[in-house]
Length: 176
Image 1: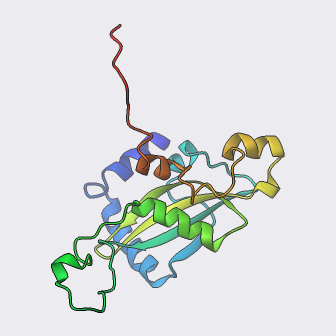
Image 2 (image 1 turned 120 degrees about the vertical axis):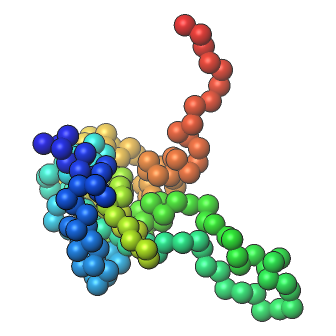
């Protein structure tokens, strides 16, 4: 079952999901930016990232505005070219921003991971997996999350590690 679900998400434009995703995005646009959902939309992806269907695991959908970072123009007599308001890209990915916003909304929960669920011309949506440490045993929460709190802000989630360059291979290649 997971294989077919994964293939359907890879080929959204070709499959019969095109109309379904269009209707879904129209509904999501009318909702608030952070919405708690009952179950993950992409179950296979959520399970590979550590989600379990038991007490203590919470899924939220976060809406992020697409495009570059919009900065206010400085008040002064400088040329726009040197003012630093155009062509300014944030150092964080949209996925990491979504994790931080979700953690800000639910400060008593810890971010486990996140994944993409959709985008249109104006927004991107991510589902963020949150874990309630109080609902899990101490050993289990330490095994899932580690011992450090506030993972999303410190770049300890998967999106944060990508930004910090910890996913790239370094060093010498050893010939076998």
